[in-house]
Length: 260
Image (cartoon, rainbow, N blue to C red; front, top):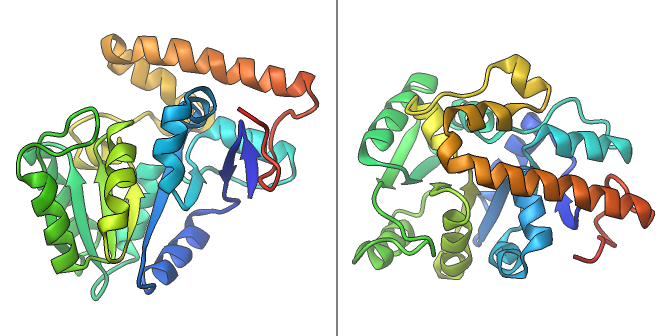
């Protein structure tokens, strides 16, 4: 692992993470996997409450190209990020029955399109169940769903639970409910639901390779994202500079991450 702004990131790729998740699905405990971009690692550095929300995460995956750049400065040797939407497509393609999946998040329309997409990637995919409804900013599902979803998850016992509530809702849901789950690999993927359901566009490959996915999303949803990107992109750079001044630039071994 290598630490960027205090978040311990796995040195991995699509194939290695696929194999690891298949192995983790055989364990009799829940495991939480977070696809981390610059917004998330900056928020963890900047906000102690959010850092506590993500304390339930077992594996942080480098989802953002700038994180890969930082890790490679420390010798990671990564050729690419592990992008949540792309990983979801590849992983479901590589995970037919008897592996099973549960989809948590998005609208009913998004959920229906996502299930159709999953079957187009892999005709043998097993979607054990799904929930597509309203969640508060605290990640609490509306009404009786908060209890019913956990009961359903423990009854169905899916191998992989895909959570696409968006940040910080999905982290809050996982933090609160992971101790209630009997087993399963919980994958926090957010935007992957909308991208793979084609309810929102994704950045073209050339922008993704240059670390400009954030710019594409900003131009697509300026009203919702302008403030977030202005603040957290600036903070990300500021923290990197601060760590550089203190001799902690780029990524370091996660055994001794920098203090927030």
